[in-house]
Amino acid sequence: MLNKTTVLLVEDSVADAKYVQQLLPKQKFDIVHVRSLAEASNIMETESFDVILLDLSLPDGSGLSSFQSMKEKGSRIPVVILTGLDDDETALMAVKLGAQDYIQKTDVNASFLERSIHYAIERKDLEETEKKLATYEQREEFMATLTHDLKNPLIGTNRVLELLAEQAMGQISQDHADLLLQIRDSNKILLAMIQNLLDVYRFEKDMNAVVLTRTYLKDILSTCLKDILPIAENRKITITTEYPSNEKLVHADVLAMRRVFQNLLDNAVKFTPAGGAITLRVAPLENEVCVEIQDSGPGMSDEEKSRIFHRFSQGRAGRKFSPGTGLGLFLCKKIIDAHNGKISCESEEGTGTKFLVCLPAA
Image 1 (cartoon, helix red, strand yellow):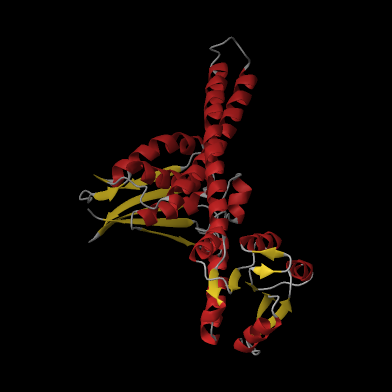
Image 2 (image 1 turned 180 degrees about the vertical axis):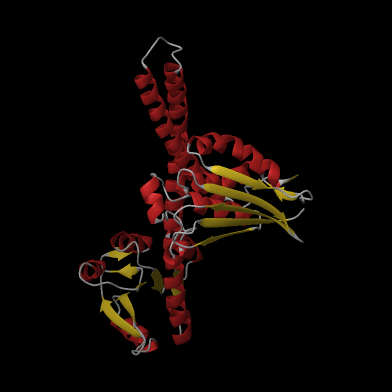
């Protein structure tokens, strides 16, 4: 059954009120008629309405003051002014103040009034949605600024910790030095989370944030491997690379793609057990270049795979191995989408995980 539109009709003229009630079909509209602003205010405390039809000449209000009074009582309810006043200036001012429509009683007919009511409701819904989006964007801007401001103190703290551990400011025991480096490493994890948050915000705000240049993906991967190899060697993880002799160029944002491969390689090392293996391949296809990163970690279930690229998603292994925001792979997908590329995941529990990243060839 079709839901009826609930209408509050604020009209002191009984004849005009009956006329409006006759224009609006009962099977579509539930109309409550009151004759003053005070009556309207009282009934709005106990009942809700989809729209208000308001006359500007009332016993306890006149002109735009009547509209402003009604707006204060029900700011989220769209108001259509239905009046005998033929005043273009008043009509324009009413719309500026937030009225959804201004209709002269002499012009009204059934189809016109019904259409005006439905449009008023739709416009008000759109306004409320836009307000929510504006509030959300302001909150996102604030969080991005706050997150960015958190980086510098952490970077400074890490440098002090390294100086202390290197005994540049006086001798300390090896146990103390190791503890300082553990604190530094924890800070690095926090810095990586912060950077993910900032990058997600940047790519969600502007999908054209990438600055494309002609480059080889192999060169970007080689840079990422320099950072990850010491960690892999410390855990006795073997990383095998397979680069083609005829690799094709791609159009890519080098810094953004470095974030992608750094995230994927960090995950591969994190989930691969000590003594395990990681394989990294670059494959030039006909119209694209693909990078494959295969680890020998615990793998994922089908349910985990289905949401691995979702915002804030973390698999059971991710929650077990390290803290995180669940934004790393979500960010990877955002960046690859901005490159008009593809990223996918193949995994089974107990058999490791393989990520495939493909970009169009230049």
